Image (tube, rainbow, N blue to C red; front, side):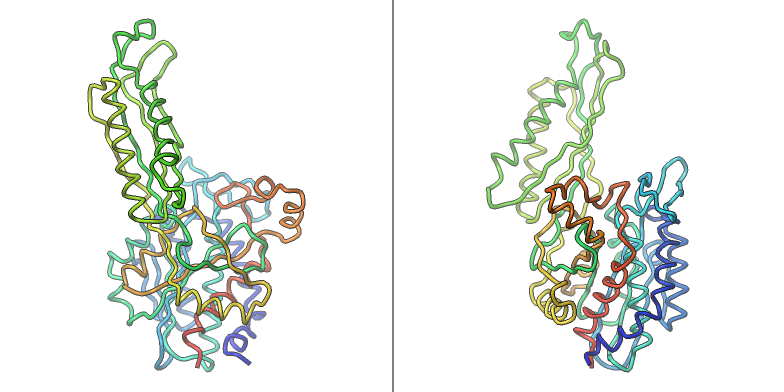
Length: 412
């Protein structure tokens, strides 16, 4: 019997409290940097399992350390924050939480991530006879705004930890529940959000010759930005550039004095990322000049995420372990254009890492959508108000994956 199989024999014993905890976390989501209740639940359960606990790391982050003799040191990470989304799942444990006037929902599966890692931490603590080394659990705040991992590193995470050999993390994906999927190399894209303010000159709508119309200027920028991807990026490189929001003007017969565009960029390569960011500045500045804008444009960068580039050797080792445990439920998966900030932790610690996906979609629903050719329509994806991973086998699979991956380094 493998060490992972031996440790996971206790999984049925924790299934009940895991499911109850998941429903509780889903019912009570918390926005980025506000994860106080979640962090307290995590810290209490880690202490009860025998972990050395450090809380309030990077604000609301929680770190648990379990030393179990000599051997390697593995870091397992879960993110805790929710999103400003009005839940529309209809579940009996659906969120009704609000932060002020803003609805809050676990629309990305972080409640499942927390539950699975707490389950894995408990099983590792109960099965110490089957492994040797150090298990480190990191419960990270503020992934959704892209600064939670950096905040933990800046707050001295490295000083709390013994030397770390490898960092591991997972995410619920809209693929069939029970499946586990990995990818070598670039797994998730880097992301840059840019708030661009361009300036015009206000005038009456009947006298456009007296003004500089920021609406027309913004429209020209939107059109020209699309040519960056189609004409300045090689066909072998992947770039997604989206203008998600434009705000300008106040009335149909008033030419305003400024427009605000919100742009989102996704890339996988740092050189391509830098080239496209420079091109965005160039295009915006040139269009402002062409429109005789009275003022230089302003660029505000926010919600910036690093690329997630899985280490080949680490990914191969985890993949071999997954293949041996999950069999046909394990498979490779292509890179995605979504973004994560997990990689800021291993980068800050100077260790290799890998990041994988677990399925959360009801398998029958998924297969029906595949057969009808409606996967993109019928399967709720992350950040959707109807995104709701099925509780099982999602929680079992996520817990198993973390234990199997950790024991690829820690098994005696």
